[in-house]
Structure formats: C-alpha cells, structure tokens
Length: 538
Figure 1: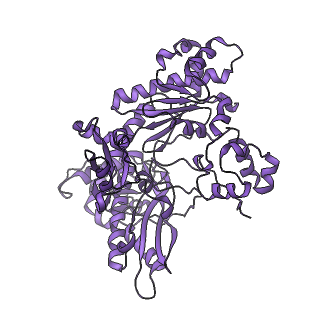
Figure 2: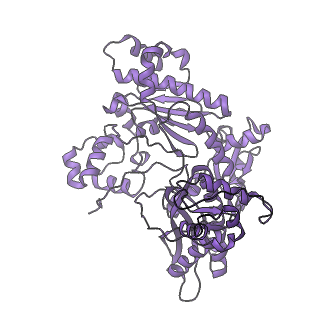
C-alpha cells in the first residue's frame, strides 16, 4: 500500500481534565477552570486549563495562587489524593468511555494517552468512497480546516477537478468520518474534542492542534512544505529530546523545513542507515509507523517526586513510600487481571538520588513473581537499599517509581477463577457453601491465580495438593487452603527497549526534564518512539 493511501485520524480531547470536572459538577460549565495537583503549595501546580481561563491569561506554567491573581473568578479543581499522591482514576475512566465510542468506528485504534487516540480509517474510507462521497460537503464539515487552502476550495476540487489527487479525495472522506466521530463522542459522553486527518500519525498529530477547540484539520501531502516551513524540530515526535538537539547541532538546522535539504546519502554519513532513512522520510512528510491496536496499557506504574527538603533521608521514609507505591500497583494489577485476563512478569524500580549536589537517576529491572503488596514493597525497598544507601546511612532520594510490564495472557482460568472468586467474595471462608467437582491432571490445568487479595496459588502447589488423590474434590481442598497457598516461582526477565514517560508524570504535565523515565506506564501510554541503535554523536 502506498503511503498516501492510508488515512489516519488523531482524536485529541480538549482540556480533558477540565471537561471531566465540568461533567462531575454541572455548575462549573462555562466558568474558567484549572485543575491543580494535590500538593497545595502556592495553590498547587496547574496541570490543565480550560479556554475561558486561558482567555484571562492563565497558563499551565502557573501555580494556583498566581492563576487567582490573573483571574480571581477561576475555579481550582484539585486532583484527588490517595496514598499521599495523585489519584487519576476519574480521568482514566472518562478516557475509557471515549475509547468505547471510538471502537465503534474501527478496530484499528491506538490509545496514545488518557486523552489521545489514533485511528486508522483506511478501510472505512475505501468502503464509503462510492456510497457516501456526496456527503463530503461543507454543510457536513463546518468545523473542518485544510492546511494550504480554503476548505470550500478543497472540497470543490475533490468533486470537480479530475486532475486532483485521489489521495486528497480519501483525506476528504476521512474528514467527514472525523466529523462523525467527534459528534458521536459528544452525543454519548458530553466531551468535546479536536482531530487531525492525514496520511500518517506524525502529520495527524502536528495538524490536530492547529485549530482548537472542537475543530479539526486536514493536511494534503502537497501542503507538508508549508506546514514545515517554520515548524521547530522539537514539535515532531522523537525530535523533542536529546536526539533532536543533537540533530540540530550536527546539521545546523532549527526547523523541519531545513531538513529536506539533506539527501539520504548525506544523512547516512552522519547517522546509521535506519535513522537516516527515517529522517529522510519524515522530512518529506512520510511516516510508515502503523497504528498499533492498543486498548490497554503495555505496562502499569506510579511514581512520586520528593523535591528539595522533601527528599527521603531515612530508611523509614523510603520504606513508607515504597509501600504506598506498591499498594497502588497491587490494586491496579488485581483490577487489570480481572478486566484483561493477563499477568505482569516484570517490575522496574526507578529512583533519582542527590549525589555531590547533582541528581543521579537509575532503574533496575526485576522479575515479578507476586501481586502481593507487601512482597512488591519489600522487593522494591531491598533494591533501593542496595543501590542508594549511602555510607552515612541516609538516602536523599528525590524520585521513586515502580512500574510493571511484560504481560502474558492468563490462560485457562475460567473455571477455577470463578470458583475462587466465590470464596473471595464470601464473608466467612469456612462457612461458604461450595459445590464439588472432581478434577485431575488430565481434565484441569492450574494457572497462577491471585485470591483473597494477598495470596498466590502456583501451578505446582495446586496440582500437587489437589491432585494427589484423583478423586479429591474442590470442596475438600478448601479445608486445607492455607496449606496450598505459596509464592509463585520466578519467571525469566525480559528487558524491553522502549523508553517512554510514565503516565503519572505525563498526565500531570510535570517538568519532564527533571525526572527519569521508564517503560510505558498506562494506557494512556504514549506511542513508542523509534529506537535508534547508533549513537548519533559518534
């Protein structure tokens, strides 16, 4: 398939956190709103600002007190606090409801964050080109803009100019579908959103923000030079960090329009082949990265900063916060197992420590053998103690994070999971009525199952205890339940090479330059960036 045959839509919810707050409190509708972090110092750091507040000069770089000075009538909605840190549950749940609407249009849906999602509607466009193309008109696309030309002229040309590109006709149909998607989201959830329509993910992302709120933008391939003319390199995915800085320094360029001067051969002299090819393509508005179906997170995690005087010094404080983070991880893992029938096999413990007046960041990858909060906390604490404990017995930790990933499907769990769910839900284990069923090695498999909130059943323990007597029944097994509960054996570690912001950090829009990052954290995960093997500075 030619790259111009694809049609990709990026849906971006407008000021999503503020919209969620408005839905929960209808009296806030139309008022200037800012969502602030749970830390109340100077009114709390602002993480989201709606458009009425922006019109008054409020920005996300302010704190609550400063916002009040700019806009005395502003409503500061505070993020809930659980376990001493931000609880983003209500925003995540709202994002899931939006995703459910998006799924009705195409199964090719990639959730990029809590408020963004990519949709590949290529096949939908193909099917509708013959039967619905007459609907592609200005009356049905009142909120649509086109890069490089007037929307009416663009739509006139796709209908009347035989020389007009077939790819533009597909983009026009994609624009109609985007209008329908946005209308459906609003009708079913009450949330407004913007959209970008292009032949690939990078361009869709770039143009989505050109006309906001509650509008959408199409970019024809021939309009890429106009878009790139003054576009800073850092605005393009994968060029906003150290790689972008190094690229700018080596090529002596600052915006995307300058990158097109370099041939692929010239780029290959400076970078490895894969990187050079990617740069050559993206300079011409070509991005071959597919929309990867992802409705659930590749990993789950949480983190917390301890800046300045809040740095963790004592073992007691470190142990307390590893326990708090482990509690959230354990709770979310249990919910994930129930909803998605999968188990995480890997844990990453991340930390930043002040050493010689500078911050040193690191992370350690470990096998995850249990969902038990206490054991997760102990494992994390032991790791931090091993690598962070200073000679004077202190730590001075400024950041802690725990993430889990490397998920595997939890196979063949239906019968026994339902059985133990009955036990877990019972108020009195010993008095719970249990139906009996004869099992043996031939007719029952024994996957690892979390039960009673804090215990684990391993395949070996269940099989050895229950199947010793092939005629023993599950009801008899319950009587000796405590005897068969044991810790699951270690699984092999599997390091990943995807480095992405943690969801907690990204969702709160904190200063990402001062933190460390590890694997993709929540669905809401940001799309994976290209991995460049060669050090471009060499």
